[in-house]
Length: 560
Image (cartoon, rainbow, N blue to C red; front, side, top):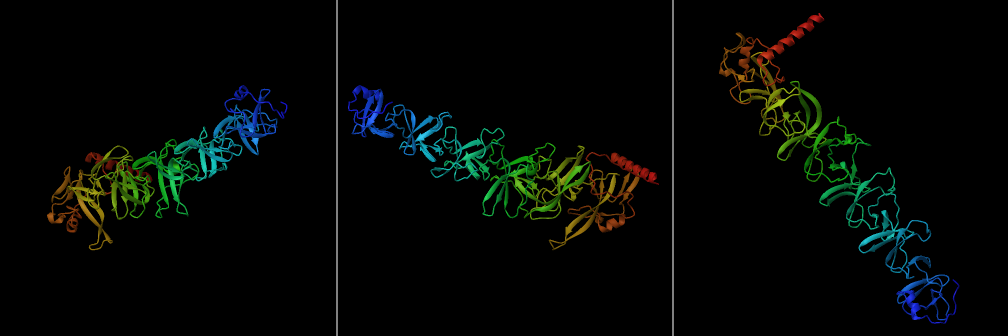
């Protein structure tokens, strides 16, 4: 189009209407508009056309190019800033435009925002209709991770800065008070090998790190990069007194739960990767932290108790006592493990024992010495999925499903301890019933630790000898104890004074009584540690004993 100069003709009303509703008057605030050869031009008072500038009409800005002609639907580079004019040639203000970049018409279309002045927003944070949007140096609306300091968009995507990192969804709006599931800031979302994580954005749009309560009614834990953590999580107090949370998955570390007297570590268990809330006030059965990654069915799982605040219960050690784990195998109590310290804890009105790693203990446990809350002795806690401390009479099966009788104290400071001594005229040793095995009647001597009178921390070992039958009933009659006409134990010369008359060891032989029987016992003494199956007949016991003797004799002959 040729450049127009000094045109004095007046534009007709029809021509003005052809410009559109945007320019409705002949004389504008700056210059005079005229329609020439079907195009609009803006002229100064001398009749010269304006070039490369904005002309105003009815408060609206319109741009004329270097040839003076009105520019429509185009980018405008004016005084070092970028603008955009619509199809009527009017400058866009406080509005959006989806278009190709001003410097690359072949590129994909992007969203741009033009401010009140009409300038394209660059390196800016813009609030539009209640939503916050971010724009880079080229004016493109950003999606995904954004770094901004105040109103200035920096957009360095090297990591999470909880005070300056935000996330914009696919519409460009900053995510607020909501979850996102995406890649790390330094990773492209279209990376097929990228790992995705859950993040939570506060109402301010900032990324949550650390512990956060009451996110839609639940508590969640996040690492320092804002990733929601799941499974085992350890909280560690750093040198500044801040608790830093780390997932324990066993893949790159071998982190056990530790008994922490310095209160430096806390442990949590969160739901799965698609949930992640901190579990509270409940039992969980899972792998140890160092075994989690493998999640192997052949690796044992353990029960843990989670407190109301979400922390795994881990004994402090203040009231702990050393102990041994025992198991009933093939009719024998066998030591299976040693613990530096076990602690008793009441959960839902029941007593449970935990080791120093917070693992609930089950089956048999022998506490080796007294502590504040525990008394020395043998305890029983049911099967592996039970674990509550048992009291009173218990019938317990071994690995062969044979049944055995036990009795555990029901009250007092020794509650739960396997009784040793006379209970309802039956003899128990460390909780299990002691009964004649090889004969109808047998003597048995039990050794017990008793306090020295008047001294709480001094003990002596004492022996008590009883006569028991195959049912475990303690015998105290002054008669000859026979089997098939054979005298097993001749107590006929004893009298009632030769038996303890009362207490825990009632009907045990006194020193005098035992001296009277020294030469009148023709059977072997029982081993008090031997556990006898319920329902085993004397005949079966005798046959088993005889078979054992025959086997021993054969072995000796072979050696000779």
